[in-house]
Amino acid sequence: MVGGSGGIGLAVARGCAEEALGVTLVARRQGRLDRATASLGDVVRVAAVVADAGSPVALDRAVAEHERLHGGLDLVVVAVGGGRPGTAVETSADDLTAAVERDVGVPWQVFRSSIGVLRDTAARTGIARFVVVGSVAGLLPVPGFAAYSAAKAALRSLALSVERDEGGAGIRATVIEPGYVATPLTATIAVPADDMLVPDDVAHAVRFLLHLSPRASVTELVLGRFGAGRHEP
Image (cartoon, rainbow, N blue to C red):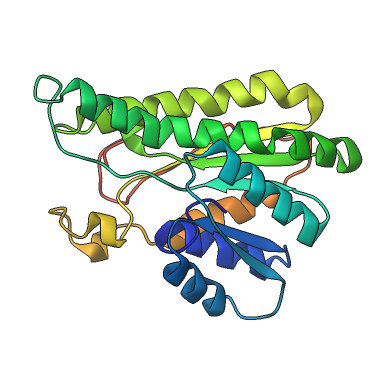
């Protein structure tokens, strides 16, 4: 679980633990990781690896540690990112590069670091899953968030490419695209928290995928907010 120290990532990790999956949390800050790990209890083995998700070496180490502790890798979930405001004309080249690196480059590198072990699992069990948390902004751009919306659209395309490229090997890829989710990242948005999705909504979406057969393909799963327009955040 990359980005597993809080918010959506921690909710997904908790859901996986409730499914009796061994979990490895990957994030940058040791203190937050320690608190997240403790919050999951001791029902299943939970490991924590401090790693910069943009570093191939760090991600390779995290994957190796998970495989050492749990004996394989059935599921990779990436929940990273964040939106910086700016219209298309206001967004600098540096801001665009940063958005693409964060929202596409990091999941891409996680995929490259984990694909070997995922293929091994799929060959042994018939299936392994790669899941990224995107946004409905990847389907319909959010006004004033041009770089964020473009990066989430590219993330959606990455997930579709992974299944097209690796589906024959048993890899299933999904992009989960929620509207606004009540986390610290959305605290300043002018939508009441009570009207937002909750992190467990995304966690339950991941748990749904875990119960599908290898014959099922869910390349994207849109989680809209009740009362919002189609593909509106």
